[in-house]
Length: 383
Image (cartoon, rainbow, N blue to C red; front, side, top):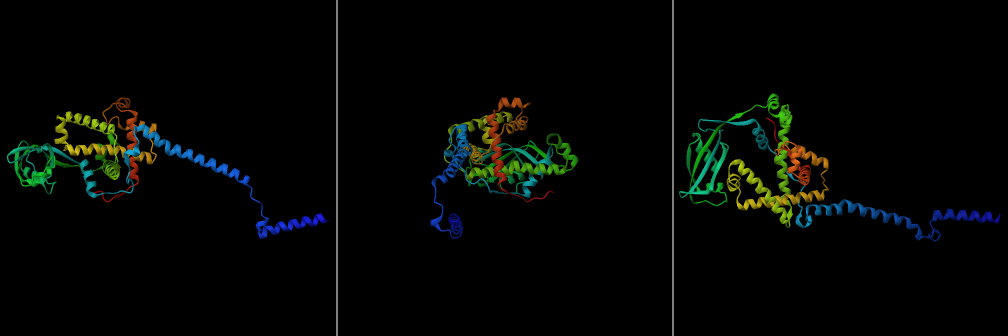
């Protein structure tokens, strides 16, 4: 009976302990009770460290090893998201007009809306000045509303192919066509314009039949709606994305650059220039300076911009963990082999390495990332 009473008291005390929470009666702390949770935490942290290394540290090291230099030492990204771009009515009309407008050479004298191809030669105080001379220039009569090209345009109205027009201008106006941006203010400048060809404007009407006739074989377009969608994509690819990419380049800080990268870009540019010059029947200098309008200074700026562009591309690839799959690389070969003049993909693979195609895929992805994270406004109507 006594044992039963004692048991009842113990039970009552236990219940009382639960109600009062008397610290003196609580269960004593045991360090052994934390061993398992600590082990679990250690394992979790170790696993997280492995994941971080595999996903962040190792890819960064692998990328640096792949490109041959430590990227963070070369470039520091600035803004590459949140840019604003507006596709305006003028930009839309220009894109559409390039497709629906054409020019047919005529023998009559030049008039408003005609396209005129001509050479111009500048003379300062009677002496020829190659710095303000250029060959194979084209302009549309009436398109320019001010400046030296309006003067050229107005002067050629009423003149035919083969004729030469002489024009005296204020030296300040001639500065606009100076190759090295020299100032001709205060000088007596005369231009001789030799007309090479006069062509009249023809404008096609956009219909389903017209679209199918001109765009089905190459692009698979069949309707007006297809055509206008294609124009929109063209503006995005060849105007919007390049502009946003240049803003990304401008926002970055290039601390230094690998000499081998600079040399490779110069070598590629020179090879392209020599090929194009040969196609146009020009010398290398004629093509670069006269045809393209570069000066030594602007050419150097172009080289450095291309260097910076590649560094920025790799920096975004690194930061956003962009990758190029084997399938995407193969698709890029399929997409471009005809464009580069090859008859088959295998022929293109002999000219362009897998690494070059991988870099092209990654560049596309980096530019798409900038575009996808920008604010694009379309403020045009389809006429």
